[in-house]
Image (tube, rainbow, N blue to C red):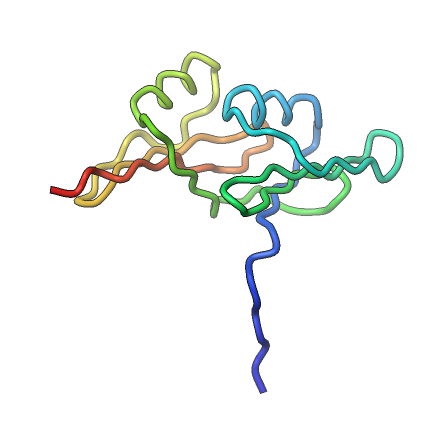
Amino acid sequence: MSIQVKEIAFVFHAVTDIPRARDFYEKLLGLKAGVQLEFSPGQWWIEYDIAGQALAISNAMPGAPASSLNLEVADLDAALAAAKAAGAPIAFDIMEFPPCRLFGLKDPDGNQIGLHQRKAKP
């Protein structure tokens, strides 16, 4: 018997400082908070909807820094310039592949996020 997976429920990043994390996800990445639950004073679960998928951050759930999230951006060079201007740690510089380009940055808790841009089809 196998497990029957229906869909991705959410992607999760553990964070330690909610205001600092919100600055990163909302101001630098421009994400809009949806679900916001305060379990107890100062212990939060916050979800961001990204094209129908939820990215959750929380300082109430255990977890180690992750490196599995990659987000599609409209302009990779502008995204890299904005990340550098904001002082975000760059995990790796732009890498070129036949179908795409990407670079990595880290949130304040060390979660690595790849910013990705598909190349135009010839």
